[in-house]
Length: 452
Ligand SMILES: O=C(O)Cc1cc(O)ccc1O
Ligand SMILES: [Fe+2]
Image 1 (cartoon, helix red, strand yellow):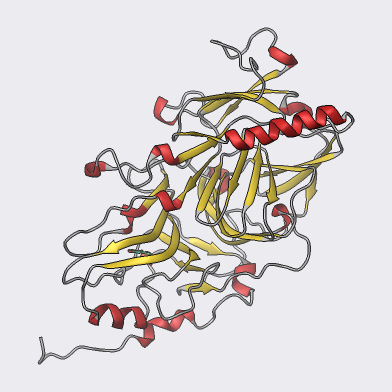
Image 2 (cartoon, rainbow, N blue to C red; image 1 turned 60 degrees about the vertical axis):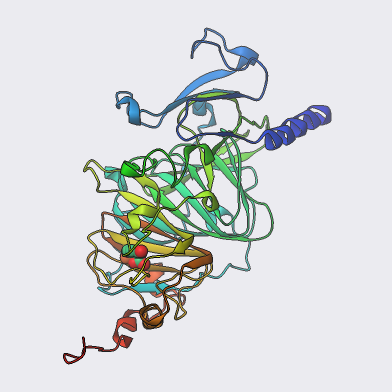
């Protein structure tokens, strides 16, 4: 927006309004094309000698140039200034409680861990000031693993911009709606929806209605993609058409601004004199997107037994080893439980993958005895035993097995092949539930050799 000229400012506001109304393009990983001004996209070529409207062409490569077609990701951005002109003298900024793997700050307890919601602060905190890392896994420098974070936001970023060179960011709002003003366009999300911002994409995070809290997963590894559906076939789970990528929207705003970059686990900041969200048109398949988790179409056991939670995978970040995800993002939401002669909640188990869970709303069926509440989280680390609490076990073992609808519930898991380290913050916060590790002791001995 040009703030010097009110009529241009109105035009810009109109353009922004229409971008919000036009909204999004549907599909997962499509080659999209979109322009906020007519003719801003070159036709049939990427790099004309001169671009329309005096724009610069810039390629953003999310995969190596030579990646196979199925994983090759790049977009062409037609922008007012190339990113190199956003570049100032960077200085280290305070990264607060945001940590990056490898972060070995405390010894990880060999125990299940659980946290109550981290309270929203009374002070004014932007997204960048309000990230609290709970766990890290793998090594960001090797492009493997993840960070599991909570964000707390009480103020919008103002003339402040950010991109993350360390990883792709999966936002999972739990309270309050946020607007992700990205280079590619505008994404609004509320609890029940998610958004993915690919590595290197510039954003400004704004509040839409009051303070916001949510989870976010920083994926250092392979970009999130849809899981294979195997014998399920061409439909159900997360359907590609429900993924929404924003249409182009830009700011032409020449005011003192700050550019923050997370790079190599540190936060850097430089002064700029304009907004970097200046992409007037773009095309390609490397772009941010949102998805409404309430559209997920779960598939499950229709006769007996409890299937593995991999049936609820929304997105997966693959590793080099087939079937061994860097991260699976798994959803436990409303569905019918119909299995006959079956203990229906999750079974007791030990898993080579490590499991970070959060709750967006409702009650999770393995933890009906309280303690796992919306905004809270749990960690069941590599090869550590876990399962339903005593309340869930007793209920599910004795209930009459009619078809039962799990209603008004939304839990999720970031499951990674790597053990998760907890941060010093997570190990010392008042939100840590110190007695959770002992929940298994409440399970009674039922064994009776004379009664089958
Ligand atoms: O531990 C958990 O609650 C997550 C989970 C759910 C499930 O249905 C099966 C396995 C599993 O790890
Ligand atoms: Fe589990």
